[in-house]
Length: 199
Image 1 (cartoon, rainbow, N blue to C red):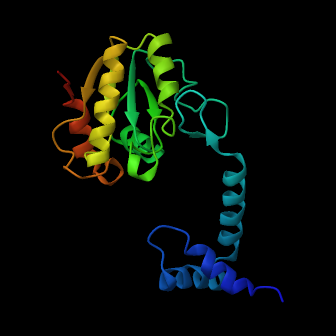
Image 2 (cartoon, rainbow, N blue to C red; image 1 turned 135 degrees about the horizontal axis):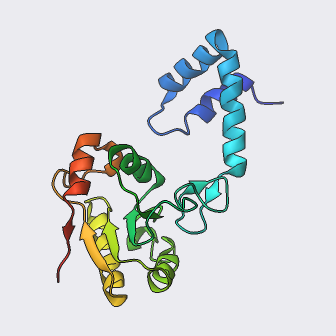
């Protein structure tokens, strides 16, 4: 016997973060009762995104192309790279600052207890970039969690091996906070006030 489509929809919506049984029911009912066209557009957009979006070959950000928009933009500086934990952090920095450098997206942070080491974060690719590209400054923009700080230390040591200058976001990003949840003015101030890291 085939599964009831409504039950399948309700269960599928619960895969989204923060969406429980009541929220998924409210979303499903809205789409079915008031916005079937919007539901079809949502389904098409999800199907296309799940099929076509992958990681940028240079920075690991999400893209439908071989290189993302930032990496393929010749107007951006190759001398400065900002390392972030997630594509959401790239969006936050782009919206809040006038940053014109490049990015590297870790898609996580070092967490040996969870089996996340340097390989899972693509740090071999970043090391190659530090050795082969004219990078003068590495901005470390990991979150100020325990894992984020451990990741920042690892990145600092890597940059030092290649003689690349290092800075860290400062002033305003709360301890234990995450960039994607930081308001634009705070993030812009923290970005502008980044400090060089010293031994």
